[in-house]
Image (cartoon, rainbow, N blue to C red; front, side, top):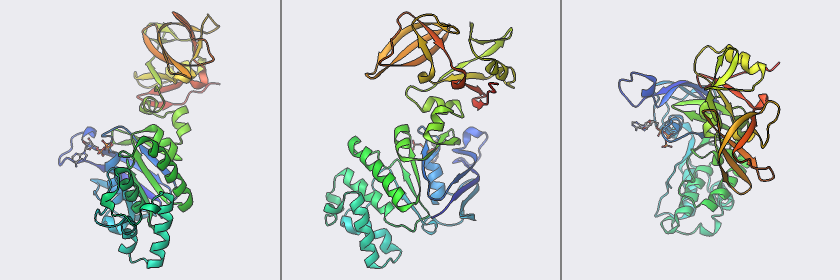
Length: 366
Ligand SMILES: Nc1ncnc2c1ncn2[C@@H]1O[C@H](COP(=O)(O)OP(=O)(O)OP(=O)(O)O)[C@@H](O)[C@H]1O
């Protein structure tokens, strides 16, 4: 088991990279602590698989170092790194039985048969594969095959870490949920460092204690699901986490007033000061749809907005609004009245985020 440190790590698939865009991994430092349950979350093409393959040794980074417990492992081949990796599609031996498939990684490192049996039975039990142990892998369903593939990743308890690369893609949605819970259970039982790659925020937050959000080859935030929701560090995290994502809009000061387009915003003095202190013209305010206060009639400090339409999602609605030229979404709970035509909005100061060049900056509300 190991702590995995990535130091000044960068990777490009091009032989002559010219700009940061040419890098699948832009220079980064990151630590996965021993025993953590982590998710690596990001959209397609942001560099998740590249990063996993660098950790497991399938890919050599263009620059920087990978350390396991402080030791540089760049020169070590995958088999010497002691990493288990579970891929999107099952990697199993079709002609072997389920039992032999699960036993394979253990027999490969000359584990005594009694111990092999113990571990295979334990993992088969957790993954509910006990009844299938004697069957040939080729006769299994796609779901069962992927469970065997996961079992092969989980069966050794001496590995430095287990890396999962979108392991539930081929799994039926109902079983997906169950397997995620199982993985969490296995993590708690065996305390192995696990890194779980996904582009699905729900999958990430049900599995992981901490999520690394990747965007354009960089980890833009590493935090708990709650931290990512409440204080996204980068506008991308705001958009990507939450449903719908966070509202962002350009702001500027005119005659001392905070303006979004032609509309003066009613915000606190701390927000105004923070905008005044920004050292860029790329300044945005962000607020989650859940945190916009929506009123049917005028209220003190309320900003008048046009209601474009409401989308009823059962237990809540999403209200599509326009504040001057700025489109906004607000979430209305089912017990709350849904305004029609006009609405009056308040942005609680504590719920506003200020983003300069896409990164969050602190607002001093005192
Ligand atoms: N073997 C390769 N050769 C050249 N470019 C590659 C190669 N593999 C990946 N890339 C590029 O590197 C970038 C990162 O890809 P990567 O597969 O790591 O992203 P990802 O986040 O895992 O995406 P996905 O979720 O679609 O698998 C992309 O621009 C991709 O096109």
